[in-house]
Length: 208
Image (cartoon, rainbow, N blue to C red; front, top):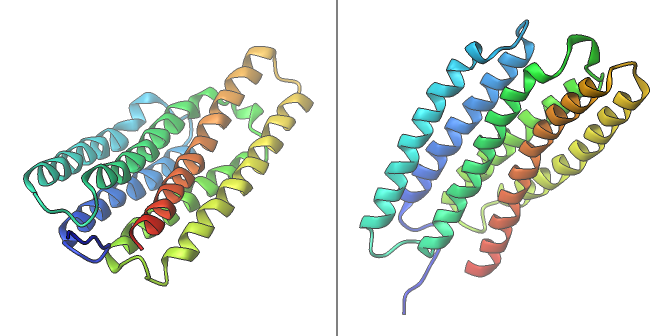
């Protein structure tokens, strides 16, 4: 009978970790863009290059998955882990493209804290992906799972506070709409990172 375990065939986990590392660097690029004056599409080149790197890592993972008969987890579960990470990267890219939507005079004081939670969420997601190769009993997994859920809740509160600030300001209606869109994009990163945590929690029960 075939046995599964998070500690077998580390190649898949190293590939997952490499993909997560690209996402972590993308979040750092996002922070640099956010702090730069007058963010614009021309300044997204760093994220474009990281997207290329992520696509290459994704392709390597798929090739390995296709060519390997016996895998440490079901192939669909390994694929779903990478797909959840891909959703985090997509959310970061959308958040970066949303930066120009926020007028300088319209940024809520809570936006900086929400952006910091974005970085915190991606860091926790990277640590979670890196811990998988150590096995389902590795001591880092429960704290990482709990941290991602906590960050998600804290991000929700900051997002709601930022949106509330919009209603109290003097921005024109269209600016309020675009600001909220940008805030929603920021929130999506902790949300997608929490989705990864929920998946890993389910897999830990499945393969325990």
